[in-house]
Image 1 (cartoon, helix red, strand yellow):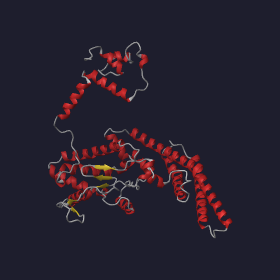
Image 2 (cartoon, rainbow, N blue to C red):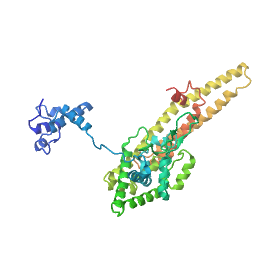
Image 3 (spheres, rainbow, N blue to C red):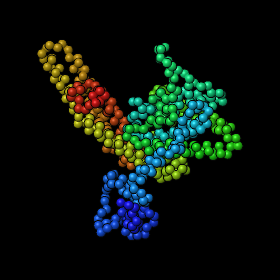
Image 4 (tube, one colour):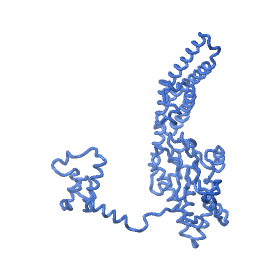
Length: 450
């Protein structure tokens, strides 16, 4: 079929929008054309239909067929020219790459100044359990640069000449093997933000979280820092000396955010506190960052989010924290009261019967194993029952999920604390009760049987 040359309003009515500009006729008849137009409105369309309509819309607007679109794309793809530039690519001599060092300085400065907002954008009840253990980075924001970049920054801060360390060779203990250059970039899996050759990896997100929010935060931070740098450098009489001075000032002022050590070590927590870094351990501690004056000004200045939108996110995340905590607590109660406690009681009862039979036969002089297991299982079951009763009462007294930060503090202190206590008791019971009667997959099943 050739190009459509009929009334444009008819096409606009087909798609339900003014694709050719202002259309008064469309405003009067905002439904598909034809005698069955009013009846043809679809409440829900599939993804295929949506894609097909977009193709048809493009065809109507530009007057080209799909094959012509494809040919145009293929021709454009073959054209030369710059399609993008990685500003974090250090090149062969990063110590002399002014563009790279400027972008690096902006990133380090931004992460240091807005570390609370970065931590806030990855806060979620599930992520609160992950950060700081189980192959996840700690809850304290820091940047890992590696030996080479750290040495470059130190030379800039101290005003000394940089000595290249990239020529180190990896010692493998076999003389017959050729020399292997030692990698100077990231080998630290405990760092939240690590430089990996030509990019930074932000490793704090949970598996169920979208990357959209951290991307928005990081891009806004970089926009702010680069705009500050541009304002300063554009007014400089001597650009090179002004750039050197800016780099030295920035790296000196924000050295505290750089940490190349073990993020899992307890000593890092004390060191981070000495440096003045934020240690926001859970969602409740993080959420005030959304409405912090500094962060609100950042996002409103660059027209990314309004203050109302930031407050809405603050309230929504707090409500979600309370609801997720309540769901997890109720699920735990159901599992403990309907499955785990009955199984523990039944198993200890079976042990008692077995012990009685052994004593009746007179063949066993002692029943130490049965006595030990019965005492331990009964004691842990009593403790678990007490915690479940306290948790049930706490849930009954819980404030509404949309009650703000006060509700979040209640759920963290009264609900989640008891959930963790119950979890510890259940883990101990699991190690004592026969795996054949345990009602749920054991840790061994999860680790080795899936």
